[in-house]
Amino acid sequence: MHKHRDASQRLTIEFFDIEADLYPQITQFVVNQFQLQPVGELVTGVEERFQEFQHLKKVIGLEWDFWSGYSVVAKTKSAEKLVRKIAALIEMHHS
Image (cartoon, rainbow, N blue to C red; front, top):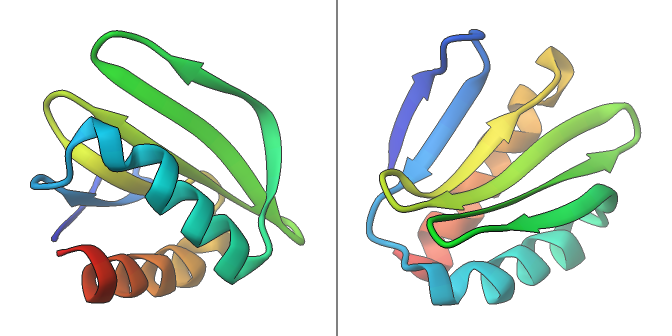
């Protein structure tokens, strides 16, 4: 697990060792555990997958790409605590 801020200063937590084929399983697990609602459609490319989700006014991104692995991103400042909780759950179950 690697925590940092991206170029837009959003809290980002990455799991380098999670492969693309686990994206749907982990994402569904997180969505169910935290009662998240999708915001927009899933974007799937050869080297990336990502979708935004919302809980109340907190917006997060659940993402995977070839370089970073699985990532949880706080799209709003208010979502940082939620991102940390999601990352802890992923680390407990999938790392």
